[in-house]
Each structure stands twice: as structure tokens, then as C-alpha cells.
Image (cartoon, rainbow, N blue to C red; front, side):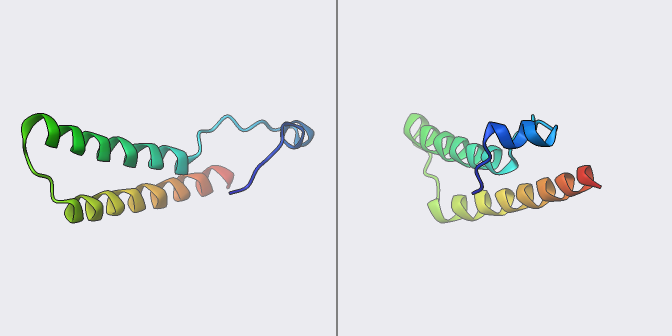
Amino acid sequence: MSEHSVNEHTASGTESTRFPVGTLVFGLILIVIAAAVLLSLLTGIQVNGGLLAIGVLVFAGLAMVIGGIAASRRHD
């Protein structure tokens, strides 16, 4: 990960107010896993961990690719 100081953003004249796609995707992964565990505990429905992991990783990968494409289009 890269870390930017406040001085770097103000020195270039552009302040980044965009939300990092990676942070959003990581947060969504955590929410999906927490929801699956909560569903399992409250209803007794068993969730297959392997299939859940595959599904979450597929959707996370797609979200990262779409976010990267969107970011590259903004810079052009």
C-alpha cells in the first residue's frame, strides 16, 4: 500500500476525495462473512465455507477489476 501525506496532496494542488476501491471491497467481504455467520447462528442454516469463500472472492475480484477500470477512465 502506498501512503501519501497531506503535504503531497496539497503540494500538487489536487486533493483526493475518492474512496479507495480496495477498502470498500475489503469491507464488503467482511460484511458478507459476518452476515453468513450470523445467519448460521440465528437460523441454524449451515453455510458451506468453501463455497462461500469462492463466491466472495469471485465477486471481490470482479469489483476490484471494475473499480480499476473506472479509476483509469477518470484519469484519461
